[in-house]
Image (cartoon, rainbow, N blue to C red; front, side, top):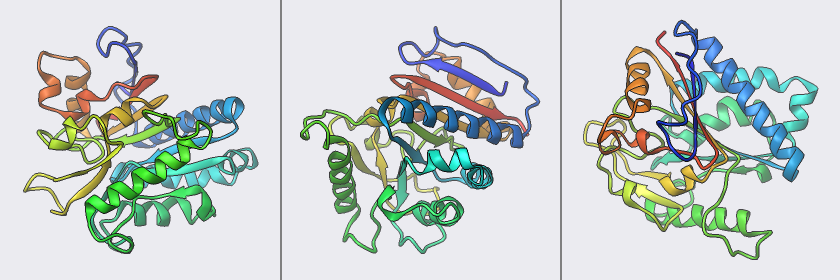
Length: 264
């Protein structure tokens, strides 16, 4: 089962297709690149811009290598010139720290592709804010400015074109961990989330909230490896109470939710 596409209204009832379980990691990342390119072309064609929320994690690092390779195509470069880049969550560490998601996406994707600073919207770190709460408030202010520019600020929730997520071993996505208070946040666009004691690094996180993630036109969740692929199958089968166990089961985009998984 390499790709599962799910509609926004009913996670279980709108399951569309399941394909080859023997998909390789490379095939998964190429599928993700294709989804990003398709979403970008649609967004640019309809609205003139494409906004993409990036994710951290090992799978994301590999994906970004493929995106850098595709960046050399002239047609892909034209898409990138009309793309604004955001971040779904961040650890409370300086950007130069090896655990920083922002530092990773700069190093692996944004700098190699020559993305201009005015198209990069990363979550503030201790480099510029005094606390995680201040960073969350600052990032929400940035998002409200970006999405409210054409509406006079009158907007309840932003609508990203595509949100990338990586599935965690415990079923978390972004920094929305099982039983975290952040899962219950309904008003804020960005919030502070505390990881479980066993999480590494054991620092506070700043994350987009579930309402913002689920408002996206498209969400792509990557699950790489046998345990995460098995967890994905459990989540999409929607047994009773699954959303009380795994935060990823609460992801249900207003547009499409696409799970990419490989057992390899």
